Image (cartoon, rainbow, N blue to C red; front, side, top):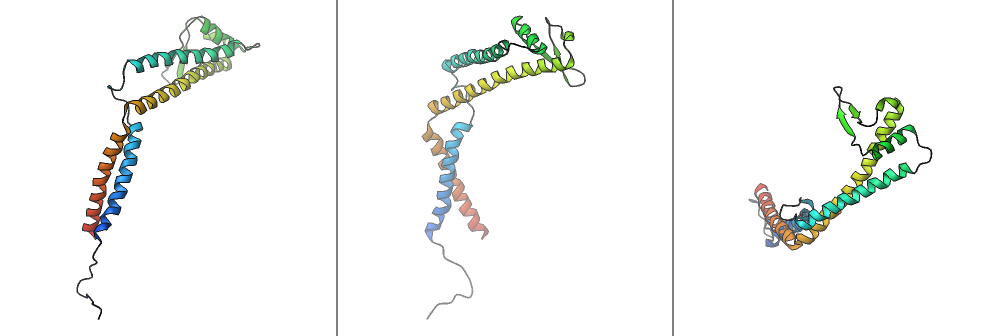
Length: 185
């Protein structure tokens, strides 16, 4: 005869059902631990003399990339007035100052080159040339810094420590999830 339990409709759970929640937590925590190895910023202890030397080397390489962009403009045979003015500014080693006027728009100031001899169209082209050359250097520097930081994180941070900490946190998160879900049901 089959036993019918009409008073309470409780189901007996397997003692192994907790392992599914915990194993998902451990796996997720381990993945997040590994990802955090690369996502966390560098600490002061990880920045050493080699990094500072590499940063100086990076600045030299960035200046060379900027110099290549300037040389491309210098080698144009029929230069526009803006390109010609740009080369004169570079040869004068004049820093370009960009200030914001009261209206909030950038106001450009040049010491050795009078901006009044350029029309508005040429002045805009000159500003764009300056921005383009600086953008080349910025992209080059950004790529170097990203590669440098990734290499330092790979060399100085032990993967097993990050994965283990993530897995332990995931274990407790999975266990807490199972306990809370059992209490709510």
